[in-house]
Amino acid sequence: MKKVGLVMGSKSDLPTVEKAVEQLKAFGVPVTVRVLSAHRCPDEARAFAAAAREEGFGVLIAAAGMAAHLAGALAANTTLPVIGIPLRAAGSDGTDALLSTVMMPSGIPVATVAIDGAKNAALLAVEILAVSDEALAEKLAAFRAEDTAKTLAADREISAKYN
Image 1 (tube, rainbow, N blue to C red):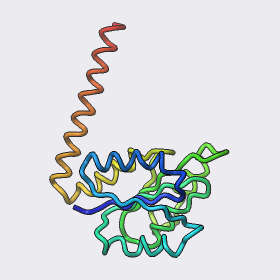
Image 2 (image 1 turned 135 degrees about the horizontal axis):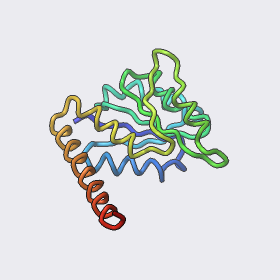
Image 3 (image 1 turned 135 degrees about the vertical axis):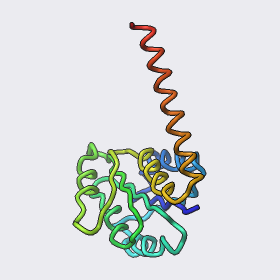
């Protein structure tokens, strides 16, 4: 099974990033977690992205706030899919990070999830990997069925109470 590389720009991003790590582990997807800043250690970030395919990664996830150039910096140095998680930061609601992550130049795509959307980033990574991994696709289908069952149970509960 291919691995997911999950890179955050700062250690302070870990509380949000952990949600993605937990989701990936729930699917049995191997994940490597790194702190690599597009601005503070660009050479290391570039080297990680450039070697990612050879190292057995299938998807990269980049979480960053403020200027949020990390996803783009990784995408510029790999042909693997890159998913960006724009993050809220001190003094920012995350809109700046969202725009920095989603506004990529033509030819360097970055899939972008909602602000602080770590769980969805992990699920998107699982979906990408499941394209070529039938066992993972089955786990994803079971996850979706369980999620549907939970929602319908909530619907029955609320309908019984109010209708």
